[in-house]
Length: 67
Image 1 (spheres, rainbow, N blue to C red):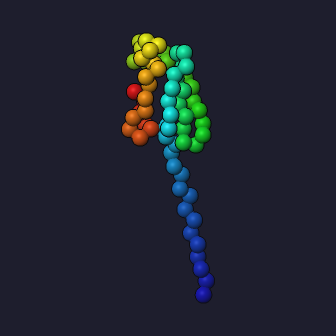
Image 2 (image 1 turned 90 degrees about the vertical axis):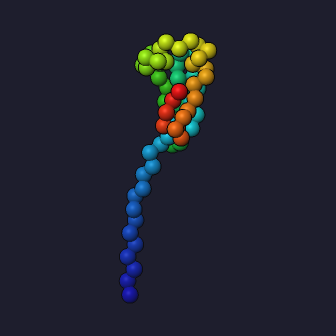
Image 3 (image 1 turned 90 degrees about the horizontal axis):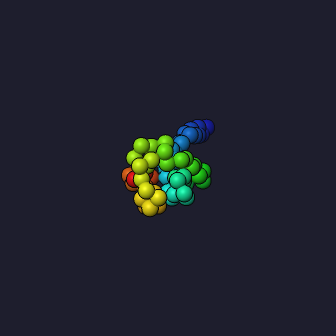
């Protein structure tokens, strides 16, 4: 009797687990360990935010949205 093993490559899309602002730069840490940073002026709504508002950046939708 022979046994067949089928391996299925399951890839999981990384999601954000943490977000914060330093100065006018937003940083996002992903579940795969990467940290991505971008200037706030890349997004119109963040560009108009005050420094205090940027400090309140949060994650929503299980790490798929930044608010």
